[in-house]
Structure formats: structure tokens, C-alpha cells
Image 1 (tube, rainbow, N blue to C red):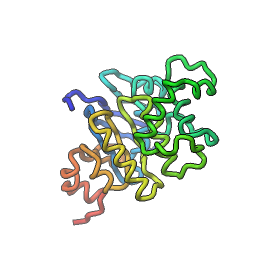
Image 2: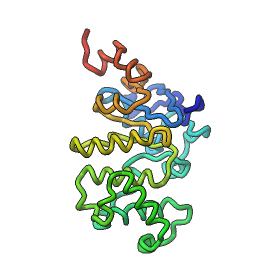
Image 3: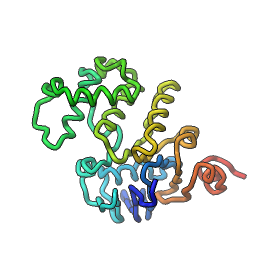
Image 4: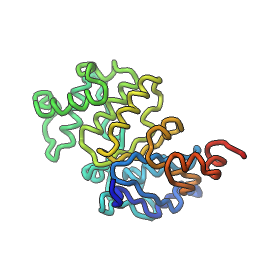
Length: 250
């Protein structure tokens, strides 16, 4: 890691009518780290992810990614620069196999993607990249399984594979283990842990055991603003955080 952050969020604000969802939101994510964004329901986590991905236009403030101000960039331009949001990269084609879905996602990410989906099956380079990504995500034995026949957790793994296969610089992961069983969740945890130092990750997750097991840095949001930011141990020990989020009234 370096002292030059991959993501620098500066004074983001977003209101929906009288609701202030992001209120002077500022934090940084260092290169190669896993940075968790936590907070109680209504804290503004989903809005923040939407602002960073470009799906929600901020009222004011700046998003600097890899040294470039991307505040006005559309989602696809941010993705082209290497900022990917999981499960928003593309939709699964339920009748297509896992490797077909991944091949199509890779083809769509290429600068010139004028070919119809069928040639993606015949492109050896695409297929090799898709196969490698599926093996890495734990789906190496599901290459030819139709997406609709995959378990819920496996579909999540496939979607994460599709994000990773485009070789992003940074991933925005919004509850990647939601709805998974224990074994499926453990597989995804290990996949995310293995990305440390390779891909910068901003993780939104409600399960504190997962957060404290994975994160290098934890930022706590309350009412759209940062209450605290630090290592998992520092956040555990912070009395304000314990009262506001972890449920400690002492």
C-alpha cells in the first residue's frame, strides 16, 4: 500500500427532499486495502455506493479516483477506468452457462464490442479468461451449468467473477454475502481476502464478524456523515461507535 489513496471522497452531499442521505461525506480508501463501510439502517451506505458508482448524482462534493476527478462521470465511464460495482456490471442470462455469461461480460467490456453473443463462445482468449475467473471464484466445476440452475450463493459468486474478470482497479461490494449459507459465505470471504493488495475494495456489510475478519480499515457512517474511521480494533474500542452502532449502552 502507498500513501496515495485510490479513492478520495470529498464532502459529498445528497438530499432526497428533506432527507439528507449524504452530509459532507469524506473519507479515503488506500490502494490495495479492504475498506469496510458500516452503519445502522438509514446511515447512507447505499446512497454513498450509488454516488461512487455514478448511479446517483451528488448535489455537491467530489469523487477522485486514481488521481482523476470523476464526479461528473457516468457509470460506464467509471467502469472503463476500473471502478466496478459488484452485481451491477451486467445481468445474468439464466439459460446460458456460467462460462457463457462470463464470456459475454468480458466481450461487452472490450472497447469494440459490436459482435453478437454467439462469437464469444468461439473466442479462445475470452473463454480462457472466463474459465480462469470461474476457477478462482470457486465455480470451476460449474462451467457449463446454466445460471438458472446455480444456487443463490453460486449466482452471487458468478456475478463477482464477472466483475473480477474485467480486471478492475477497485471494487464496490454492496453486501456480497447477503442471502448465502455459511459455506457459500465462507467461500466468498476467502475470495475477497485473496484480493487484498491486488484490488482495492470498498465493502458494505452488515455482519460485523465478516467486517472485522476482512477489513483493514472500517469507516462508520451515521446520518450520512463519518462518525469514525480506523482499524477494526480501533472501531471495536470506540465508545461512540459502540453506542451508535454496536449496541453498547455502557
